[in-house]
Length: 323
Picture: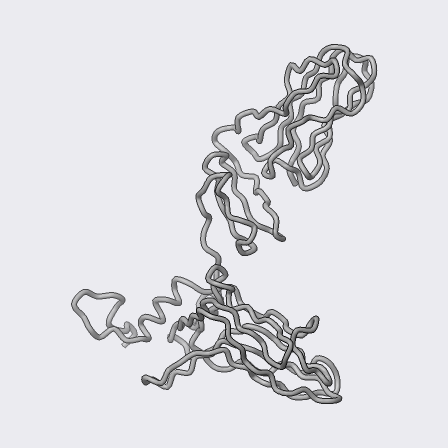
């Protein structure tokens, strides 16, 4: 029989096996795996606790951080277990050699003999000593998801040395795009790749390398104009403003009149992060004198107009991509 009974989940039935729950869980979480696959990949959840991070210590132990691990069953069509840890704990690393190298691995492992003794834990698999670094990596245990590799060097007595603990975690699929506002977007402590959509600015953002980045998207309604602020220096500011265009470019609109002070004119309002270009951008200026001039936007959102001497009018308007 190809169709496995019962389906998940039926009112009035009491014969829902654990395998059915594991398969149901595997379809809703875990890292992507090849189409047509029958065993999920699994991985640690990046949001819960410390995401099961492994940390070196001043001893031959490593610390397992809090978190939730989605642990795939090795056998096809057996889905995925879930284990969670609410407090840090340590696991020991075997003693080093005086002359040889070794690579150990730390995995979240489920032992399931099909009875009430089933359990999960962080398990160290000790590698084989080798005459050169780093030594062969041992095979993964059954019913496991990786957490870390431990590079054991000759005469090692602590695991908190540089390069000893290598993060080997698979990260569970990140949550979907989070609808929010620009003032309530995720903090930079959120996992890399976290995405959000700002309902007040119609901007799509993503955290990359610990910084906010914005993805240009086609908008149905143009961003409203925002002021660059004002300054004196003998200039009358007819226009000094900025916005994002419907195709995600930064548009600057500057028009000055009068016989103001020439040189670098620093606009007081710094552009918010979603308006800042990835590299310095320059928009040409057009003064009535015909002299060369321009407006510069740097990666910190500082806007500076370079006005020529003797100009009675200065216009610097245009669009630049943010990338």
